[in-house]
Each structure stands twice: as structure tokens, then as C-alpha cells.
Amino acid sequence: MSPSAIRPGIFWVGVNDRVTDLFEGQWPLPHGVSYNAYLVVGERVALVDGVKAPFGEELLRHIAEVVPPEGIAYLIVNHLEPDHSGALPLLRRVAPGAEILATKAALPLLDALYGIRDRVRAVSDGETLDLGGKCLSFHAIPFVHWPETMATYEETQRILFSCDAFGGFGALDGVLFDDEADLTHYEGEAIRYYANIVGAVSKPVLRAIDKLGDLPIEVIAPSHGVVWRRDPGRVVDLYGRLARMEGEPAVTVLYGSMYDHTREMADAVARGVTGAGVSVRVVDAARVHPSTVLAEVWRRKGLVLGSPTYDTGIFPPVDQVLRLILAKRVLNRVVGLFGSLGWQGGAVRKMADEVAPLGWDLVDKVEFKGAPRRDDLARGEELGRAVAERVRR
Ligand SMILES: Cc1cc2nc3c(=O)[nH]c(=O)nc-3n(C[C@H](O)[C@H](O)[C@H](O)COP(=O)(O)O)c2cc1C
Ligand SMILES: [Fe+2]
Ligand SMILES: [Fe+2]
Image (tube, rainbow, N blue to C red; front, side, top):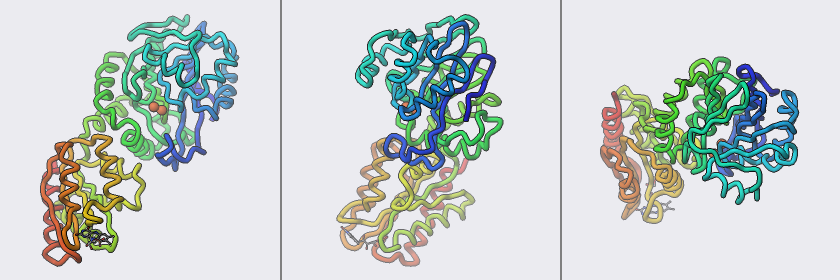
């Protein structure tokens, strides 16, 4: 994509990354991701946000279509994760006069990551910067996504450059704005991004939504995904629901199975959910990537976990995603557990122990030996029905 004017004097100069397979080395990017950078052109020019290092030259070409890069006066570093800051050394060489503005908490990171110490200034929370015809203000949003993160607001055009907040996976497929985009696709990618990248800092997200809500915002320009100009409230609502972990009134059945016995039970549980008039998604923990599993779990209020007993414990593929769910601190779930055993068992007991710290609403547990018999399957259906009844609003 080439640079586009968002509003008078404000330009998207970011890049689409369609070659990185794994974001942060672990989250698949089947639809790519965008690193959005923005030029704010007043009498003086500021670049807000940046791109990952391999895309620095493309960023420079985009900037050069709007203004000479060497004339940039300010590099606004909202966040130092290298998906945004990687091109800073290059920008420094090309625009040696540019001053870097970031929060105080960013300075040690800037030094640790790039050895950059000169022409760096810490801005305070709420501080303004008059560019002549454009005016920026800076708003700390700690831990969305790192401790040093801030958002930048441009007063004359009422644009919020929200950085990782309100972002999503998915490269910009010939679109830049929410009113041009297939939002089913981009909101799906935003949910997966939220669950994978931002989910663990949901409390800071809620604090940021609260704080930024004081600004008169007409456009939200995040550092990943589409720019929200028709309905910025829509992505704020989406993020709010995800951060509060409300979940749709539906159920995810997440299971693993070696010889299909637990899988048969998962199907019975799902029948029970559907029978109660609630929608359900069945997910095989060994076959669906943890990135997607996490998004499925984040979407729905109900969660039924199933595992065979394996070496006295939880089947490893189920255990692996369970650990991820625990690490991301998914709260407010209505939960059922089921599992199979050959002799002593242990999977169900250990799942119950593992999830206890999250304070989930545990509806019931169902255990069976070997192949599930008709009455076992009936208990599975009943478990599905009970969880469904509890999530239905
Ligand atoms: C590799 C392996 C390890 C197992 N370890 C245990 C165990 O420690 N305790 C137990 O009660 N059953 C154990 N079992 C038995 C299974 O839990 C039991 O056969 C269960 O029904 C398998 O469910 P599935 O068909 O969904 O894989 C083990 C089975 C396998 C194949
Ligand atoms: Fe980040
Ligand atoms: Fe990011």
C-alpha cells in the first residue's frame, strides 16, 4: 500500500507484513499484520509509531512520498516493542536532527534495545507539543502493552494514535478504514490479537479505555489493523468486552483424545449444549493452534474441558493450552470438566486443581472409564446442558 491521507495533514505511512510467519515468535499470521506509522505534518513534522526493522526502507519510501524524511523533527515512540521500534536506528541515521519523544519509562528500554541515549526527551503525561497547525498530546497507558507505552492524540483532527490498544492482526487488504473493510474478518483477527497479545494486561486495558475516554476522539488510528473513522466506538466496545472477559453466551468444548473415547464424550457434551439452544464450538487441543484455541476460549462465556488421563495426569496437548489460559488469566468462565481413565485416573482432578486459582464457576465434573457407555454419554450431555443453561442470558 502507498501512503494515504487520513485527515488533512495526517498520513498513514505504515507497511503490511505478509512474510513473518509467527508474530512474537509464536502466534501464526495467516493473514499477515500491518505496522501502522503516521506522519503528522504541521509546520514541523512528527512521525508517530514505526515498523519492524526489515521494513524500515519501505517506511522511508512512504515517508518520502509525503515529506523529505531528513526533515522529520520528532519521532514519537509510543511503544518500544520491536514491531514498532525496529526501524529507529535507520530513522536516526536518515533524520539525525529528529528528537525522540517517549515516556520516562521508555528511556532505559531505548538504551537497552538500541543504545540510543542522545536527542531523547521524556514527555510527561498530558504534555502537549505544538507542531504549528497541528498539536499533539501524550497520554501514558502503562502496560498496554509494555510499562512504557503511551498513546498520542492530535487535537485539531481529533485523532487518537492508540498504539497496540484497539489493534488487530490481519494485513490491510487494500483497505485502510473501518468503512471500507470486511469487519467480520478484521474483528475476528482483532479478537485473536487481543487474546494472544493483550489479554494478559486486560486490567490496564480497562484503565486505558477509562482514561482515553476523556478525549474528544473522532478517529482511532492504532498501530495494527484498520483505522476507525466511521465508528471508533465499535472497537472500543469490542476491546471493553474482551477486557472484561464477558464472553458471548455460547460454549467452547476443548478436548484432547488419543483413542477417540474422550472425543466421543466431547461430541455428547456438545449435543447437550445445542439441545439447550446455545451455540457451541468443539476444539481439538492437539490439532488447533494454541493461538486460535485462546481466541475461541476468549470469545465464549462457557468452557468445557475434556482430557484422558495420561501418565497419571492431564493429556499434554490439553495441559499445554490450559497453561496458556492460566498465563493469560482468562476470568469469568462457566466451566465443566470431563475426562477418561484406564485405571487410577487423575486428569479431571488435576484439571480442577489447575483451574481453581482463576475462580471460575465450575458447574460439574464427569469422569468415565475406557469407552464411554450410554449412561456416560448421557452424563456428558447433561454436563453440556447444565453449562449452557448457566451461560444463557
Ligand atoms: C500413553 C497412555 C498413558 C495413559 N496413562 C494413564 C494413567 O496414568 N492413568 C490412567 O488411569 N489411565 C491412563 N491411560 C488410559 C487412558 O486414560 C484411557 O484409555 C482413556 O480412555 C483414553 O481416552 P482416549 O481414547 O480419549 O484417548 C493411558 C493411556 C495411554 C495411551
Ligand atoms: Fe506491543
Ligand atoms: Fe504491536
